[in-house]
Image (tube, rainbow, N blue to C red; front, side, top):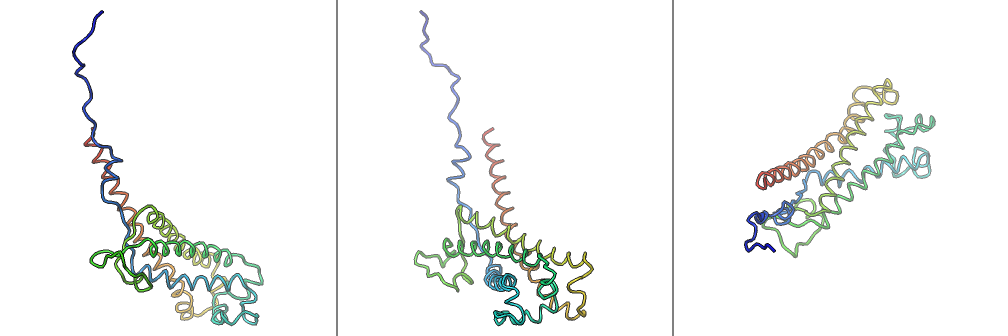
Length: 237
């Protein structure tokens, strides 16, 4: 019977720490909200909810209706954009109501983002404290950050909603262009600029900036993760 007294010399050396372990031990990602975007969301959401309420309560919310008082400005706007006036309602045009339904989806997404920022956010820098008093001014002005899985979900949700808002608003204008300006073509140039283009333009400019802000952060996080993975692979090879 033959036996060996020596252990084999081809045992593999201790493996290097895995990339998963490095990911756990390295500092985590965090999201820093934009004050401008936060203000825009706080201002625009009530306006969009007011607008959607007008659409869903037609004809009671329209001029002469029993609920018209809270939507008095639409008596004028309905004569500028017929999608908000009697012509579209009488012809049973469903686009404006469908758009309002999507507006509500976007509002829910934006509110979710703001709630996550408020609930899970922490003050950054020298103002950081466990006893930080949160309020409207903290949400608007304080330098803050939020981290973890919930922050990542909120960032993806708000970025997607910004893309929805921009795309839908651009489509709103393109429908007019491709239909021969059916619902706004009766206006003079100044009325069209100041009472249709400028108000609707807000929902292109600010969501576009917000999408850029959030998208840049998502891209930066992905590039950092990709760089870390490549560095890990090169060290382990």
